[in-house]
Image 1: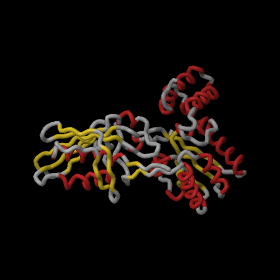
Image 2: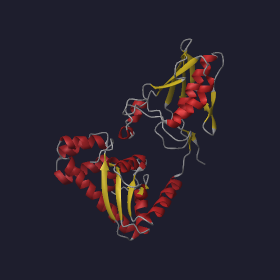
Image 3: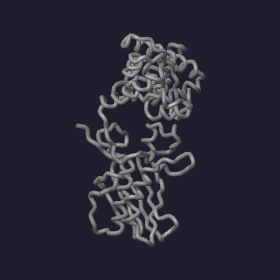
Image 4: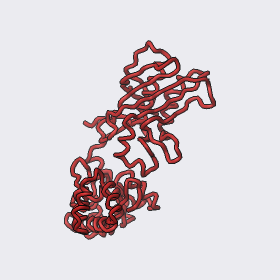
Length: 345
């Protein structure tokens, strides 16, 4: 039985509400905070809360996304709150360390999160006061390096993003069934499909002007969905994705989850040897921490275009062979790779 959890905005609001209540009544012990999740409700565990002076307090929670694979699991969320004389704005939301900024410099606190703050805090603010809430994610800046946030305009940290407070996990089978169903519907009218890995792939597709009618989400199940496309009459598939994911196909890895297999640096290094014969360049790639770092190293060496061109063709050949082997069908596959910033390479 999978366990539900809550999205990051929920914990930020809970920390802020705990801090505000403690500021108003320091004697009250707060272990849990009840939140309106619009429309659901939840009791959120509070790790710590303290008054800093007569007008400010700090609340701390810890993220719990349930059984979802989420890199924010157990990360601390702090909310610093301050009451001040009434201003034009009753509730002022700010981003502290670890909370990302948009390209315009605003705190990356999006509409659902703002509605949660309004629903849970406005009624608690005294009529002659305004409340400033600063959300702090102490680990946010480091965690953001493992996401594609920068590709979508969120800089220097994580965002308070989402359309629901509930983090509802689906089993692997349920996710794959959803993607298969989407494919079967779309391929009936559009035999030339675009496969997008994750929300970042879909965002790049939309930026490139690709119609939603032909976009199929794949998660990590590239192999299963390529076969599904072949079985249901697709003529072609464009694979559009982050290079660190799609490069795995060049090595014959057709489920791109890092929990199952990785090897992307080794695949890039093998391509370097195949194309250039340079042992030094291959060693430089293997010394990198990420596929993006490897790409940058090869750019500096003047080898990126040649190596990644080879890899793109290798992915095409491997994918077409995979469909032929398991579906007995010919499907033309083409490939677009992009980097962590969403730039096509």
